[in-house]
Length: 399
Image 1 (cartoon, rainbow, N blue to C red):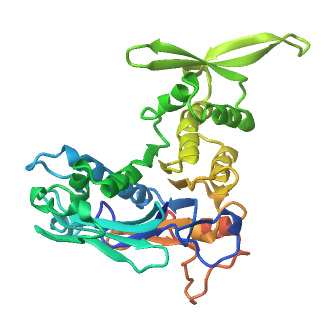
Image 2: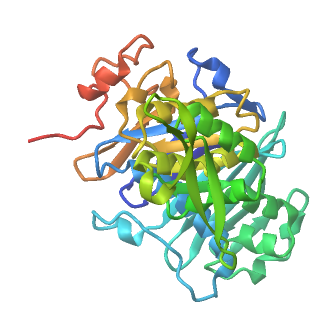
């Protein structure tokens, strides 16, 4: 599970910021907290902020770290890295971007990170903390200099000289059959990023799971029933057997003039169903897959096209320990203020983004927010009302 994620000099973020999934010492919704490697972790985090405040960039930073690592294996020695530093001052564009992540895996907590520019990896590090032990350095890279633990990271010994300056060491060791390194890459592969505005990238996931009766097909059907989308079932046909493209038709009841059901009628979901229904169909597969597999699902604009009750239902799936049994986590950005309610989310799960006077984004959580008098946010506040009234910042300023 994700413990925390720290990033610096990425897109609208000039300064170092941390998104933490560590549970604070508060009482609300304590039943949703998950214990992993002696860490008490949160299954959900949500970003609020004005348009262009940088909330999507928090999610994109996590995606960028994942992509730099997973794509490292594909790079030739002279290929450029995908770097997007802050560019609204005179120096940051020439400075490295930094990512560091802490996560639990196979009974240990790992801390992995790297500093990089478009041309090279400047630093890279990996630490492990086993339960009941202190944190131990597995390797530390600074430029072309490597310090590798002969006992804790034996799979990396002797491989440093084969590491190009634009290649991440963990990626190279994994390619050379390093088991721990490969498990770390597999963990990063479990981070799934999707856009709530455009379902083209993941539209076929749900249909494939249903058509092939894969793990999760039953849960998807149950989700459709519970959310009352208006159809009885989906009929799925193979539209292109070579490309494995599928099409779906929704089955609806047919009634006579007296309101008696006399049969069924099918409609093309693409042509006849509402945008909200289509999105729920599209996102159901990734949602169920994440919950069953213990993945991290990152969604930009989760609430787009969805009724607030549906968004609340999705959050509830991750918050319910009886449903979310494998430590899946949902991290998303939204404008839906209906969710700013301590019946649905804890104060440590609510995050805000706001730009300072230099157009650099700041990230802070509700639980760490202090008013001008230094007071914390009490758990009896009307969070939605306070947010709309500007108490916590992170709202548009109208002239």
